[in-house]
Amino acid sequence: MSEPVPSITSAPEPLAVDQARRTRSYFIQMSIRVVCIIGAVLVDGWVRWALVAAAVVLPYSAVLIANAGRDHSEHDTSPVTPVAAPELTELPAPDSPDVVDEVPDAPTAPATPGASGAPGAPGAPGVPGAGRVIDHVDD
Image 1 (cartoon, rainbow, N blue to C red):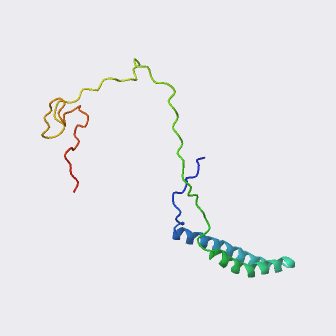
Image 2 (tube, rainbow, N blue to C red):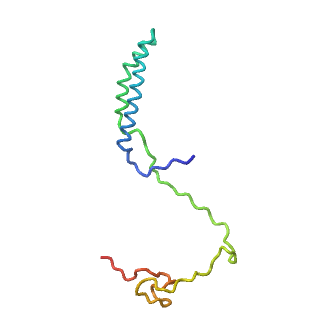
Image 3 (tube, one colour):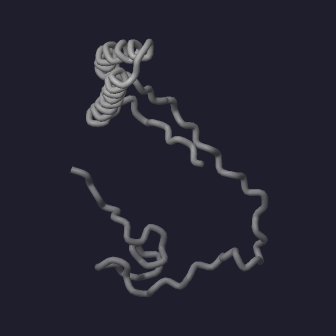
């Protein structure tokens, strides 16, 4: 099972989610009240009076719980410390097939329009920085 995702904000839950939670809570408590009323009609003795008392008290408590507000959940907004990458234990041997020392052949055509294509010229293929804008001024 994966770890819970940490919250990156202290913003409260959306209003629609809060209203749905409060509506569901009220509906469940009123359903229990209906069961208490039906049970009070069907049984005798002290159980009847206990069910009547519950049916009388439940609307008050249901309204208090449903209108309790949006301060039910708290989020952990503490900073998350990234896990360090594992250290490299050994370097590959220089003669192994995984090590490539040669740069692949670059095309001979100029990388940008107007570039000279001469070796070492700015914009020439295979030259570091080829295709970069050099004379750029921000307005």
